Image 1 (cartoon, one colour):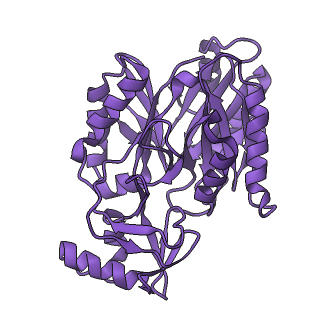
Image 2 (cartoon, helix red, strand yellow):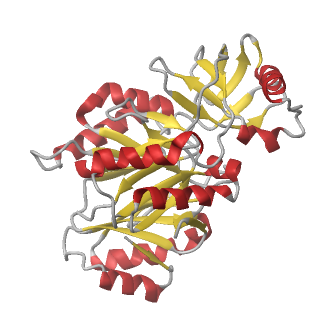
Length: 380
């Protein structure tokens, strides 16, 4: 992996130095939103050389244990894994899942035989309203043929923006997926601890919670924050506090899936990043302090358990934008703690708008907020 400035000279130098094979090589590129207009320079250079290029546009990059809004990360493949880019995935209504499953099955046929189970690594446009439902259907179709992981690209303003690309196009409302080799399985962690009080999402639609326990969602949310934390939440200060008090979907296995409220409607509905199934059990969470509950140590431990010694390796890292909003400057301290806990040589990645995976190995793929997703980058 290599971090570059997006100028013609820097791109050409990076491609010259990459030592990618004349045929079969490829690049996964991560760009910050501020540099999206320079993407054609990278696309044109890869086209001239016959190099496969895919990637996403994110709010910011991770560079030297900090966040950056300039340049790009180029992650090299000596042999490009099977991949596909599906734009406008919801344009045909219910065909979204069918298109994704068909593309994944075709790609699986191109995976080498007698190798560890690949990881279906997906980068969705963060503005898609039905990612969680797509993941549910995908697992029912593919089951354990793959491991599942991924992140969301797009603008931190939550405004629509084309954010997924290959060598010739930049698209939105879709998904980019790669079948990464089995030795690159990502690990996900959030460090939230569930409280005892539960409630029911009695009326929902997609990412909108209309009613909790048969009452307007904001009224219940407001009361519990006041009772548990002594905070007088109002419509005026909602955006100041909501990122610090997400709701959690409590799964049957005890796992908590975090949903960050990002908008409040006039009728008291709460809009979150990610879907909330109707009648799901909800809990009110308080976002943890940096590194609280052993989050980073646990993440490092799980990475070593799966991938072995991490000393000096390159670590691909995605960090939730909502988590950074909650922690502010302390978010970078978590990156520093992760670097120290893993002893990796370099961390590269991006700020994401939602994450995909499970906090347990071989777990059911779920759409999360406020997590970190990491994997050692192994040039294959």
